[in-house]
Image (cartoon, rainbow, N blue to C red; front, side, top):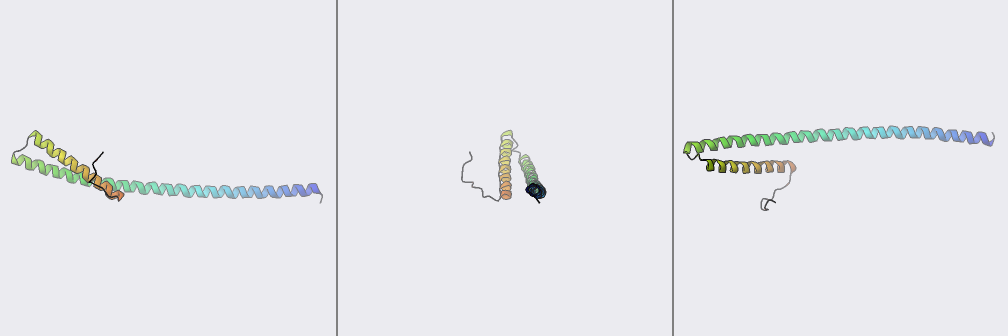
Length: 121
């Protein structure tokens, strides 16, 4: 076997090793990308479920507030104090209560503490 045959055979062996090594690396990359895509999809699905649960809790709180407003309006009407100023002040009070309850629900889902001693910005 002369030097030219040896160089050609060595080049062929290195070429085959590179080819199969590249194929393995390509396959490994595709498997990793597939795993990452499925993991990201599951993360988005769980996030959407949690958001749906939070919206359901807020919806229940708003239903409760609506019934409280109706009871208060009925009580005011029965007392005979139904003036525009009283109605507006009660509506503002109910809206502030709704805001606080919504903040508490969001806080509950985020598991953070709310500091009511600080003034809002």
